[in-house]
Image 1: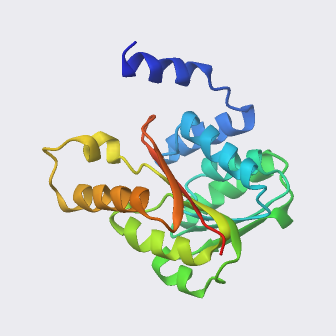
Image 2: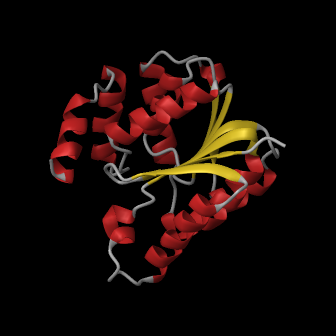
Length: 209
Protein backbone atom coordinates (compact mmCIF):
# COMPACT_ATOMS: atom_id res chain seq x y z
CA UNK A 1 0.00 0.00 0.00
CA UNK A 2 1.36 3.45 -0.88
CA UNK A 3 1.86 6.27 1.61
CA UNK A 4 -0.79 8.30 -0.21
CA UNK A 5 -3.30 5.48 0.17
CA UNK A 6 -2.58 5.26 3.90
CA UNK A 7 -2.95 9.03 4.29
CA UNK A 8 -6.22 8.99 2.36
CA UNK A 9 -7.58 6.17 4.52
CA UNK A 10 -6.70 8.07 7.71
CA UNK A 11 -8.28 11.29 6.43
CA UNK A 12 -11.50 9.47 5.58
CA UNK A 13 -11.56 7.56 8.87
CA UNK A 14 -11.23 10.62 11.14
CA UNK A 15 -14.56 11.82 12.49
CA UNK A 16 -14.41 15.54 13.24
CA UNK A 17 -17.03 16.77 15.73
CA UNK A 18 -19.59 19.11 14.19
CA UNK A 19 -18.57 22.12 16.27
CA UNK A 20 -14.96 21.76 15.13
CA UNK A 21 -16.02 21.30 11.51
CA UNK A 22 -17.96 24.58 11.72
CA UNK A 23 -14.95 26.34 13.21
CA UNK A 24 -12.80 24.91 10.40
CA UNK A 25 -15.08 26.44 7.78
CA UNK A 26 -14.93 29.80 9.54
CA UNK A 27 -11.13 29.54 9.71
CA UNK A 28 -10.84 28.86 6.00
CA UNK A 29 -13.09 31.82 5.19
CA UNK A 30 -10.96 34.00 7.48
CA UNK A 31 -7.70 32.78 5.94
CA UNK A 32 -6.47 31.36 9.25
CA UNK A 33 -5.21 27.97 8.06
CA UNK A 34 -6.38 25.39 10.63
CA UNK A 35 -4.63 22.16 11.52
CA UNK A 36 -6.03 19.17 9.62
CA UNK A 37 -8.55 16.87 11.27
CA UNK A 38 -5.91 14.12 11.32
CA UNK A 39 -3.49 16.32 13.26
CA UNK A 40 -6.34 17.63 15.40
CA UNK A 41 -7.25 14.12 16.47
CA UNK A 42 -3.62 13.43 17.37
CA UNK A 43 -3.28 16.51 19.56
CA UNK A 44 -6.59 15.64 21.22
CA UNK A 45 -5.28 12.17 22.00
CA UNK A 46 -2.04 13.64 23.38
CA UNK A 47 -4.00 16.01 25.62
CA UNK A 48 -6.21 13.17 26.81
CA UNK A 49 -3.25 10.86 27.49
CA UNK A 50 -1.54 13.54 29.57
CA UNK A 51 -4.64 14.15 31.67
CA UNK A 52 -4.09 17.83 30.93
CA UNK A 53 -5.60 20.37 33.29
CA UNK A 54 -3.69 23.40 31.98
CA UNK A 55 -2.93 23.96 28.28
CA UNK A 56 -1.26 26.85 26.48
CA UNK A 57 -1.57 27.37 22.74
CA UNK A 58 0.75 29.61 20.71
CA UNK A 59 -1.24 30.56 17.62
CA UNK A 60 -5.01 30.60 18.08
CA UNK A 61 -6.14 30.81 14.47
CA UNK A 62 -9.92 30.59 14.49
CA UNK A 63 -10.02 28.10 17.35
CA UNK A 64 -9.78 24.74 15.57
CA UNK A 65 -6.68 23.47 17.37
CA UNK A 66 -7.95 24.76 20.71
CA UNK A 67 -11.25 22.95 20.23
CA UNK A 68 -9.41 19.72 19.46
CA UNK A 69 -7.28 20.11 22.60
CA UNK A 70 -10.36 20.67 24.76
CA UNK A 71 -12.08 17.77 23.00
CA UNK A 72 -9.26 15.61 24.35
CA UNK A 73 -9.20 17.22 27.80
CA UNK A 74 -12.69 18.57 28.47
CA UNK A 75 -11.78 19.64 32.00
CA UNK A 76 -8.70 21.64 31.07
CA UNK A 77 -8.22 25.40 31.05
CA UNK A 78 -6.82 26.73 27.77
CA UNK A 79 -4.66 29.84 27.43
CA UNK A 80 -4.44 30.87 23.78
CA UNK A 81 -2.18 33.52 22.27
CA UNK A 82 -2.48 35.26 18.89
CA UNK A 83 -1.35 38.61 17.51
CA UNK A 84 -4.47 38.96 15.32
CA UNK A 85 -7.55 40.29 17.17
CA UNK A 86 -9.73 39.06 14.29
CA UNK A 87 -8.52 35.50 14.83
CA UNK A 88 -9.16 35.68 18.56
CA UNK A 89 -12.66 37.03 17.94
CA UNK A 90 -13.41 34.11 15.61
CA UNK A 91 -12.03 31.66 18.16
CA UNK A 92 -14.09 33.20 20.93
CA UNK A 93 -17.19 32.73 18.77
CA UNK A 94 -16.22 29.12 18.04
CA UNK A 95 -15.77 28.32 21.74
CA UNK A 96 -19.09 29.97 22.56
CA UNK A 97 -20.83 27.97 19.82
CA UNK A 98 -19.29 24.82 21.29
CA UNK A 99 -20.75 25.81 24.68
CA UNK A 100 -17.36 25.87 26.36
CA UNK A 101 -17.59 27.93 29.57
CA UNK A 102 -15.82 31.29 29.36
CA UNK A 103 -13.88 30.39 32.52
CA UNK A 104 -12.08 27.62 30.65
CA UNK A 105 -10.49 29.82 27.97
CA UNK A 106 -8.08 32.71 28.48
CA UNK A 107 -7.38 34.88 25.43
CA UNK A 108 -4.16 36.88 25.09
CA UNK A 109 -3.64 39.31 22.22
CA UNK A 110 0.00 39.92 21.33
CA UNK A 111 3.10 38.61 19.67
CA UNK A 112 4.20 35.33 21.17
CA UNK A 113 7.78 36.60 21.43
CA UNK A 114 6.54 39.37 23.74
CA UNK A 115 4.00 37.32 25.69
CA UNK A 116 5.82 34.04 26.36
CA UNK A 117 8.63 35.44 28.55
CA UNK A 118 5.94 36.64 30.97
CA UNK A 119 4.20 33.26 31.28
CA UNK A 120 4.79 31.12 34.36
CA UNK A 121 7.50 28.47 34.19
CA UNK A 122 6.51 24.78 34.47
CA UNK A 123 2.83 25.71 34.63
CA UNK A 124 1.32 23.76 31.72
CA UNK A 125 0.59 20.12 31.01
CA UNK A 126 0.44 20.67 27.24
CA UNK A 127 2.06 23.36 25.09
CA UNK A 128 0.90 23.62 21.47
CA UNK A 129 3.08 25.62 19.08
CA UNK A 130 1.22 26.53 15.90
CA UNK A 131 2.54 29.99 15.12
CA UNK A 132 5.13 31.45 12.78
CA UNK A 133 7.40 28.59 11.69
CA UNK A 134 10.28 31.04 11.33
CA UNK A 135 10.28 31.35 15.12
CA UNK A 136 9.57 27.68 15.86
CA UNK A 137 12.94 27.03 17.50
CA UNK A 138 12.52 29.98 19.86
CA UNK A 139 8.96 28.91 20.66
CA UNK A 140 10.07 25.36 21.38
CA UNK A 141 12.62 26.73 23.86
CA UNK A 142 9.80 28.63 25.56
CA UNK A 143 7.64 25.50 25.39
CA UNK A 144 10.24 23.50 27.28
CA UNK A 145 10.32 26.20 29.95
CA UNK A 146 6.54 26.40 30.24
CA UNK A 147 5.88 22.65 30.32
CA UNK A 148 5.81 21.01 33.72
CA UNK A 149 8.00 17.92 34.31
CA UNK A 150 6.24 15.20 32.34
CA UNK A 151 4.49 17.83 30.22
CA UNK A 152 4.05 17.54 26.47
CA UNK A 153 4.99 19.96 23.69
CA UNK A 154 3.23 19.66 20.32
CA UNK A 155 4.49 21.24 17.09
CA UNK A 156 2.13 20.77 14.12
CA UNK A 157 3.33 21.63 10.58
CA UNK A 158 6.84 20.57 11.59
CA UNK A 159 7.38 18.94 8.19
CA UNK A 160 6.83 22.29 6.41
CA UNK A 161 4.54 20.83 3.75
CA UNK A 162 7.01 18.01 3.14
CA UNK A 163 10.05 20.22 2.52
CA UNK A 164 11.86 18.86 5.56
CA UNK A 165 11.95 15.41 3.97
CA UNK A 166 13.28 16.75 0.67
CA UNK A 167 17.11 16.59 0.70
CA UNK A 168 17.20 19.19 -2.07
CA UNK A 169 15.46 21.79 0.12
CA UNK A 170 18.23 23.84 1.72
CA UNK A 171 16.53 27.12 2.63
CA UNK A 172 17.13 28.43 6.13
CA UNK A 173 13.66 27.64 7.50
CA UNK A 174 13.68 24.07 6.22
CA UNK A 175 17.21 23.46 7.48
CA UNK A 176 16.28 24.88 10.90
CA UNK A 177 13.19 22.67 11.16
CA UNK A 178 15.18 19.64 10.03
CA UNK A 179 17.73 20.37 12.75
CA UNK A 180 15.02 20.90 15.36
CA UNK A 181 13.43 17.54 14.55
CA UNK A 182 16.64 15.53 14.49
CA UNK A 183 17.97 17.11 17.70
CA UNK A 184 14.66 16.61 19.51
CA UNK A 185 14.37 12.97 18.46
CA UNK A 186 17.95 12.35 19.61
CA UNK A 187 17.60 14.19 22.92
CA UNK A 188 17.82 12.17 26.15
CA UNK A 189 15.88 14.81 28.11
CA UNK A 190 12.59 14.16 26.30
CA UNK A 191 10.63 11.25 24.86
CA UNK A 192 9.90 12.34 21.30
CA UNK A 193 8.15 11.15 18.18
CA UNK A 194 7.39 12.54 14.74
CA UNK A 195 4.19 11.84 12.85
CA UNK A 196 4.56 12.28 9.07
CA UNK A 197 0.81 12.35 8.53
CA UNK A 198 -0.61 15.39 6.74
CA UNK A 199 1.46 18.47 7.68
CA UNK A 200 3.43 16.56 10.30
CA UNK A 201 3.42 16.67 14.10
CA UNK A 202 6.50 16.77 16.31
CA UNK A 203 5.58 15.63 19.81
CA UNK A 204 7.77 15.32 22.86
CA UNK A 205 7.25 14.81 26.55
CA UNK A 206 9.74 16.08 29.11
CA UNK A 207 11.22 13.50 31.45
CA UNK A 208 10.44 13.77 35.13
CA UNK A 209 13.38 14.35 37.43
